[in-house]
Length: 204
Ligand code: GAR
Image (tube, rainbow, N blue to C red; front, side, top):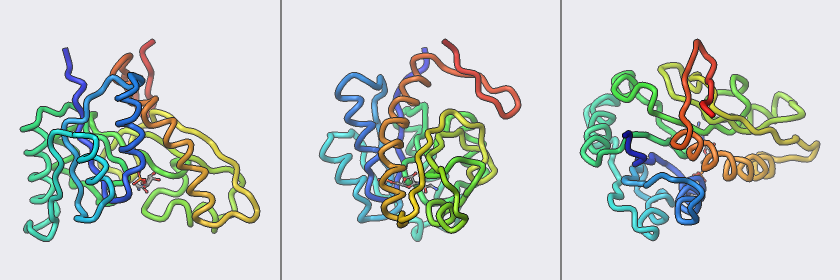
């Protein structure tokens, strides 16, 4: 049987990691966070992971590696050594190398703060506001070699208000992220899915 141990990779404050850990503790998400990797020494995700007692919590410094692939392979080795089956990106702001994506094909999941395929990239919330959309949201998707381009697992929609700022819209999107990410992870490990072309079919 496939293990439900996950590795979480993060760069920022770690609120998505926190809600996954909370859902785990409350029995709503039957996964075990075996490893948290951050590429920023001050990422809030590191403190959250330590406080929750995640067995392996590591800051890996991209500058200490020859290039992106070398850094990613160091992360990949750690993930394999800790027997993590799924890699969950939670505000991880580095583009993954092809070598990493191929090594864990179909087992890397990301959350993105827009309704993909609109507004891929690092400035999704600002880009959606600047475009003038009336709804936005978040997307949980599989990671492939196209930036924010893998098959979609789940999405949630929020309204965009006339007086929204980047922060107010992001806060509304994050409320949905915090519900959707743990729910989707639970669904992945409890039911599973198959992928046909770009379409994810959930098993019931
Ligand atoms: C989240 O809103 C997530 O969607 C976004 O970073 C934030 C991380 O928040 N991810 C991306 O923009 C990836 N391209 P968190 O650190 O509080 O979980």
